[in-house]
Length: 236
Image 1 (cartoon, one colour):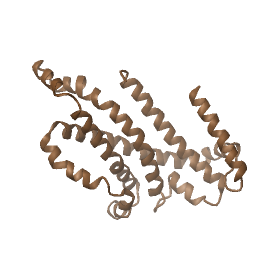
Image 2 (cartoon, helix red, strand yellow):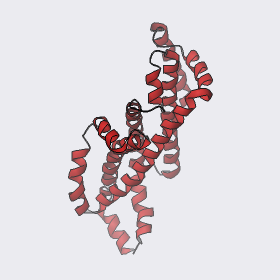
Image 3 (cartoon, helix red, strand yellow):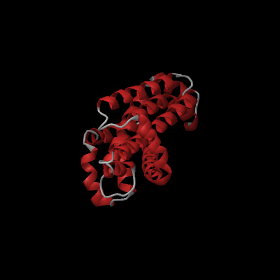
Image 4 (tube, one colour):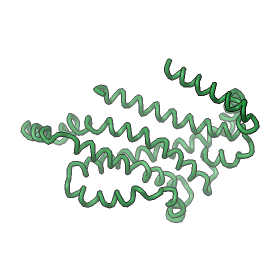
């Protein structure tokens, strides 16, 4: 019911804005009707292309980021070696690297996936490292005294410690990743919602259909993260 109230409130707000600026912003029912018509014809191709790039980028970021974060959290030598590099690279505006990636990797999906990875992976590494280092030392002493295997320590101590931070980081990173994906799809590509939105800047119905599709992709990803968090973090 809370989701329904939120959706109704959003649509009512959209109608109010449309009444004020109807020349620029179309009414919700017009956008939804056009979306239903356009999705099977042309919009689904761009939605699938953007979704594919986002999902692949997020999966790679999680796999690499979790492993690196755990390594930095458990190893003082690794932290001393890699943390300065992370702190130097993380503040760099990733969108500024897009032309370099296009030169190095071409104009295909690889460039866009790499851009998503370098945006998402740094917050994951930092938050996972902090989650590991927040585990009291006594827990490690107990694990050692009980002769827990590496797999048991990961399953019973490390993974439960990092999962809440991981899901929080993912929720924050999804929005940033979508924004940068939109930017990257404006360069030398013919598939993706960023490309679709840009080429239909003068057609307000198609423009808002593209924006709606991009919003739905993000919303579905948020729901997936929320579902996984409820299943895997039942103690939270």
